[in-house]
Length: 490
Image 1 (tube, rainbow, N blue to C red):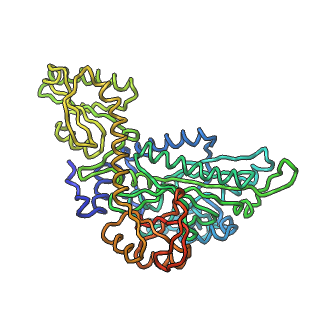
Image 2: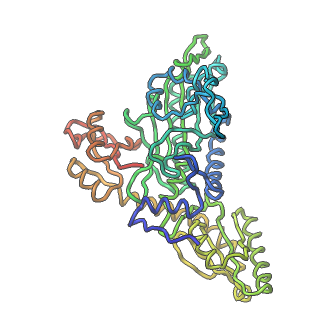
Image 3: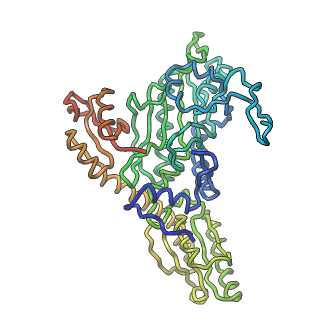
C-alpha cells in the first residue's frame, strides 16, 4: 500500500512528485532527465491523444511522420531558430561502437559522421526541407500536417511530465497561400487547445499572445493558453505560432499563384505535450491523490466486491457483472476489480489515489437489498443507490462531475486573479498571494527583464480579450494601452 502523500500546503513540489510516482503514472528512468510513462499514465495520455487527434482531423489535418534526426546544416538556415534551440540540442557525431579491449565498448573514432545530426528539439527545419518538394502550386495549398512524436531538449533541471529531456507531443506544421489564412489557422488551433482544455481536462485557460522575448524562435507571433495551478503558479499548456514566411524563405518553399506569379508560402506550427499530464494533476488533485475528470479517466467507474465466502463472491460478482454490462452499453468505462489478492479497503485507497471518478461497492447485504454503495472522488461523498437505477444515476453523474471540476477550477482562478496599478502592490501581491496578476506594462524588453529579474514573475501573455484602456506602466509610468498577464510559472 502506498504511503500517505505529503500535504500540498506543506510542500507542493514534493506532493506532486510523490503523487506522480504513487499513482503509478510515471517514474524516473536510467537516463538522467528522462522518464518512463507507466501504463496508467500512458492510458490517460492516450485519451488526450485520441480527443485531440479527432479535433485535428475534423479541421482538415492529416498525420504524417518525419525523421528523428536533422542534419546540422538545416539549423543554420533560419538564424533566430538556431539561436533559440542551440543550447538544448543533443548531437549525434558517430555511428558505431567497438570493443575497447577491456570487456566493454567505446565509440569507434573511425566512424565519425561527415555531418553531425541533431536529435530533433522540434521539426520545423526538416519539415520545411520536405515541403519544398511537396509544394509547387496554389493547388498544393493549404498543406495541413500534424505529427505525433517525441522530441529531445537537453534540460538541466527536470521534473516528471513538466520538464523532461525527452517528451512526447504533437506538432502541427501547415503551409498557406496567404498571410490571412495562416493567421486564421494559428488562431483556430489555439481555439482547439482551449476547447480541449475546458471540455476534456476541465481546466480553464486564458488565450493570449506572447511578448517578443517569450516568442518561439523563428516565429512572428506566438499564441498560447495559460492555466493556473493550485500553488498559484501559471503553466503554459499549449502554443500556436504564426511563422510568417521565415521558414519558407530559409528553405526556398515557393508556389505559383493563380495569376502565375511566384511567392513564398505562409507558415504555422503548433503543439501540446505530455506537460498536459502535469497540468491535469495540478489543476484537480488533492491530498488523497489524483482527481480525474471523467472525460479523460481510463476507468470512469470501478466496482469493488465485498465478500467473506466463495458463495457470497459468486452472488456479488453476478450483480457486479450485470451492472458493468449495463454501464458499458451506455459508453461508460467500467472496471470490475475481482482480484482476491487485495482486501476491499486496500482497493478503496488505491482507486482514491488513482482518481477514479466513481467507485461502486457491492456486498451480500446490497445483493439482498437491491442496492449499491456509490462514492464520488470529486466530493468524497458516499450514498446508497438502487441497483435498478444504476444507469440513470451514473450516466448523468459523469457530466455532473466533469462540470463540477471545471467550476471548482474556474472559482479557484477567479479567487486568485488580481489587478494592480503600482510595482510595490505587484510585488506585495506576488509574495503574499501569487496567482495571476493583471498590470499595465510599457511594452519594452527592458521593463519586462527588470520585472523578471527582480520578482521571478514573467509576462505570461497579452490576453486576446484584453480591452484597450489608457493606463501607465506600473514600473516606468510610461503610457500603456492594455494590461498584461503576469505570474510566476513552471
